[in-house]
Amino acid sequence: MPKTIEYFAYGSNLNREQMKKREITIEDTEIVELPGWKLAFTIYSDPWDGAVGDIIPNPENRVEGVVYTIPEDDLKKLDHYEGRNVDNHIEVGMYRRQYLPVKSKEGWRTVLTYLVNRNIEHKSKVDLKPSKEYLQTIISGAKKHGLSEEYLGSLRSINYKE
Image 1 (cartoon, one colour):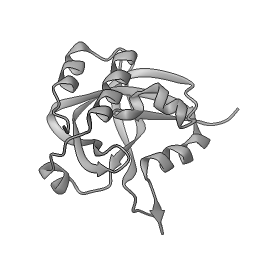
Image 2: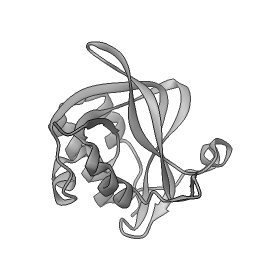
Image 3: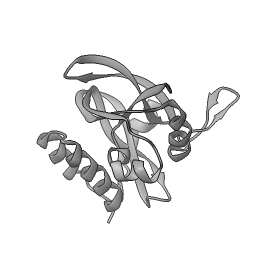
Image 4: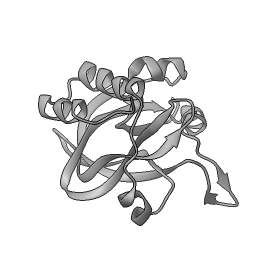
């Protein structure tokens, strides 16, 4: 039986159609939250023509998302789409892998996610705007997964690039 990985999606990868286009096999999903973190837009993406999602520590916030159970072999595809590159054991790409504890109905567990590969001080000072299309991709995925109305409201209140 092939090995699987639990991957926490909080940005455009919440959208299952996008994951399907990227040929990522989703074996299972579960709604989770990441307390003490905030959804932010800290880096510009040419393909999206606007900022893309990131998460940064913030004790007063939480990020809702889903944990996908995916085949371990699909991590190479995720790395490609997330712009993850490793050179001599150092993360040098747009995003880097990170393991974080998420909270589900069953309790806490540590799962893989991707964060923008910049330092916290830099990311805390950045306030870029996502494109309308990118933000709609997130909202559509969040809605289809059944994330809370409160969280959907916070996503809808994000200012996007005109």
